[in-house]
Amino acid sequence: MHPKDLPCPDFDGLNLDYYLSPDLTLPIYPARGCYWNKCTFCNISQYENAYLQKSVNNVVDDMILLSHKYNCKHYYLSCDALSFNYLKRLSKLIVENKLSVSWQCETRFDNNITESMIADIAKSGCCMLRFGLESASPRILEGMKKGIDLDIVKSIIKLINKYGIKVSVYIIADFPGETHESINETKIFLLENKNYINYIGVHLFELMNNSHIYNHPDEFEGVFINKNGKPEYINPNLDRDTIINMYDEIISDLYSDICIGSIPSSNISSNKFINVDLIDPSTLEKNNKFMFSKIIQENIPELDIIAGQNISVHIPTGTVWIDSQGDDEQL
Ligand code: SF4
Image (cartoon, protein in one colour):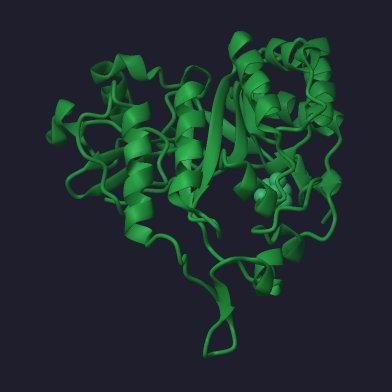
């Protein structure tokens, strides 16, 4: 179904008190597919062969309806990437309709982003923008076909910070061609710009079915056809444990102010790390997640939890995800 034909999401019958965010945050689906659609590791075109958008009028209508029905003021525009042109048009309409909302979404470090676009977006209540930075090694970015210029990235995140919007970036560890040098380039970039980046999610590279890399293994270092006739990837430069440890160190350096405990190397795909020794485990009431997020806020006020933010909390038995977008829990 085309997103323009999708009705407003219906949350009737769900206990919205179970959402983990301090304030209710609801998803709205503004688009399907990706307008960039070139990243070599991504297989979005396998599932969505066209980029289809809901009109900004429909998104604003959804916000109005959801705010009346559920008294919701926070929205997550849930799709893989929205362009700044779309966000600018949406922001204008939110302001024209005098909606008092906050919202966030995933987007791209496009080269045409201007300060006035960011100012408009901030005025309409944007609280966070999430970007796939993936790496700060120009060589790796070229292999990914991300279309990202690191100098432009730096100026964009500074401007976003200037207008009070939080910045979240995703990193892919162990992309084909990853070396000590490329990890260090990413580390230096993140450290140099850490004042403008609020959240970082590091994910290990996975060879996805029907991505460009999967279909062109000979173009990528370490990708080969295995004995079952399937493309497989093994980094010839570094083993996975070394790579995980290197990224763990980067995260520790970035968050040394709040990260007191060690980070389990099996889970580097987290946004922020909290030393749970600060929290009495007996207060972790499994059925009272809202209370849990309150406990974290009270114990670690510098975390500045906002609606819709992902936080992972490492505790001896595993990881608890505080995620207003879903109800994931791994205890
Ligand atoms: S990784 Fe993101 S930006 Fe790149 S093609 Fe996939 S959805 Fe689009």
